[in-house]
Length: 68
Length: 143
Image (cartoon, rainbow over all chains, first blue to last red; front, side):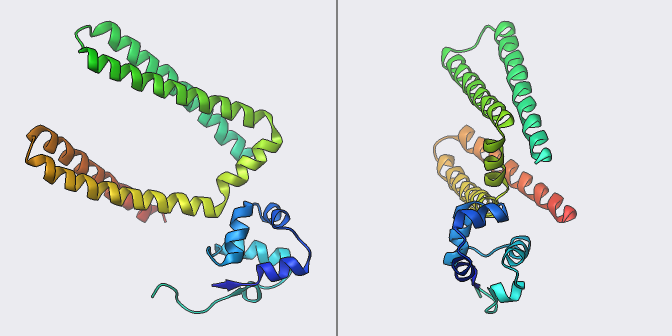
């Protein structure tokens, strides 16, 4: 699943650490999310969407079933 | 955060209980049973002191965390971070499968050399598989 976290974070001039603190996760999780190595849970997706003031659909791009 | 503090306090007391009960069992059995081979005595002492050292280390860690808000917050984020939790789950899943397969192979191989070792490993493997099934049933009911 692709996401626009890095794009929105840079547009808002927020560091990875600041975003991590706001979402109560580690910086490594933000890095993995931005690299597409890790897919956020519904809770984290919701928190991230709230932080950026967008909808979950705007932040995360669902591209169909993975690993099939 | 308060719940996390309580969780750490509970863990501290669990470690303390482990130290006390482990010490009571170790010193009690050492006093009651005199006829223990030197090798076994050394091994038991090593395991006992290992448990005490690990428990003491954890207790000191919990005390430091409980007295320092910044460190407590950092530990809370590290512990509740969903990626870390996911990594732990995947690690446990993979390692238990590898362990089960390796034990199965060991049962086959040791069967050619030692009946006792082979049966011991077989019991260990069966107990492990049984525990996995029971835990799986528990979570199936819970979720």
